[in-house]
Image (cartoon, rainbow, N blue to C red):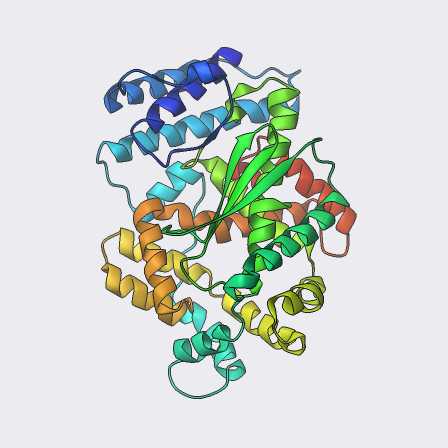
Length: 404
């Protein structure tokens, strides 16, 4: 298995020479990084197929632990995704659903426009004024934008709050740390770049105004108990403690991303269940941002309704990537059904161009992780069990099909 793992790492790094977004993180042996000219895609596809066959010839034994069996399954699923990504790089176009299944080991649901109407009706009741709903929502949300001069203070306070919640339940490796950078010109709102040795760089995109709810979203998702914690626990428990080198590389377009994004999004609710989030925002973040704390409950209620529209983003991506609508229509759909202001909707379509069906990992991933944790006793009324099951998932090779 260790030989298979090393070949897998080298293969992923070789694919990264063709696809700048493919290798999200690597903190393994520097000597394994390719330095010669890129190997042809067809040859890499052959290597991936051979490697997967060799892996399947290694049978799991009765005495193997659950973690060892998960390791075998993990490598098989990840290699299948490498094969699919190579096929895409060789101009083999997949439908949105086929791509999601082959890259992320998941089947995104199909929803109709009518499925979003109840949430739109709720927003229509909550938002003041008349006229198009998106215009009313945009105007309402503009009153909750964090002033640029106060953004860093608010974001760092949010990280401190998320970290404190996490440390009360999760033992992190000694010396774990992160730095925050503010960037522009990206298709995403924030990103965690894991560097190894339990360190992350968290970048926040300031191209568009950042509203107060995004502080907790980004701090938990990118930091605690999200991506930073996920990567640090994998490095500690699997790479360092067990020597499983395959976890020293993270191919973005793979089933691992559904777990990474799903746990990062669900981690927000784990850290701040029920009304705890609104209370923290009202008492800590609103004053730092210079916003009126008395309005926090109203804003939270509106945002909960908007959150129910998240799958509208998947439907826009499916139709756009399948060639059923063009980019203008995709942006219009996001404005109408996902309540994204025009500038954010256009940014999201650029995200579709770059990352394609990756969008499913945020909402479908969150729902699958939530179902798994709660099925194992981690319900809201059992917070200790919730944290324990959540941490076990963060520290394991379990992939989407293993959540069922």
